[in-house]
Amino acid sequence: MKASTSTTGVELMRASTVVYKVTKRLMDIVGSCVALVIFSPVILYIVIAIKLEDHGPVLYKQTRVGKNGQEFELWKFRSMVQGADKIKGQLADQNEIEDGPMFKIKDDPRITKVGKFIRHHSLDEVPQFVNILKGDMSLVGPRPALPREVAEYDERDMERLQVIPGLTGLWQVSGRSKLTFAQMVDLDLTYINHRSIWFDIRIIFKTFLQMFDPKDSGAY
Image (cartoon, rainbow, N blue to C red):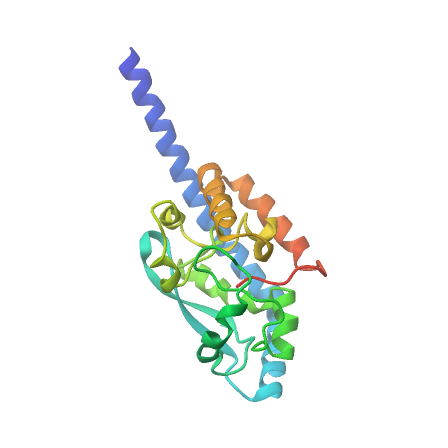
């Protein structure tokens, strides 16, 4: 009798996991399609603004690490001057994140005028809805890390890679750039251990409100 009850419990857990994964994927696809339609007029303005400012490329491609360490190309609207990655080494001593491998500085001199605006409202992330449609990312999950960051991860940090990375997540709506790397990992693992569709919906709602927060400074 106990064995039968145990087997039934396992089957229910598996079914629940399948339902969650299917529902989450459907939400990703529908949400991304709707977002791209809604943002289409804004996308046009952003493209024109970036081109008018410095005539450089509109999109910026960067290798990131996804679920189980799989690398993929993440897309953003370019918010920095051309060649920004080459200048980064000169700014290493200004990094405001005191622990861990992440890099973030306030008033980054590499950010363009248009870039400052689109970052403030998280509009530089809009191209990542395409990443979500491709399955590289999800609407909600830990932010995808850079390969050089993952190279410095310890065993606990690696737990972030258990799930598909997200456009937004618990870290982003809990202070993001004001938090330490260790705090970010704590929040990501909290999300992973308690993830559900309702949790995702709450995070998406908070993200929407944060886009219009004058104190918010954008993701990395």
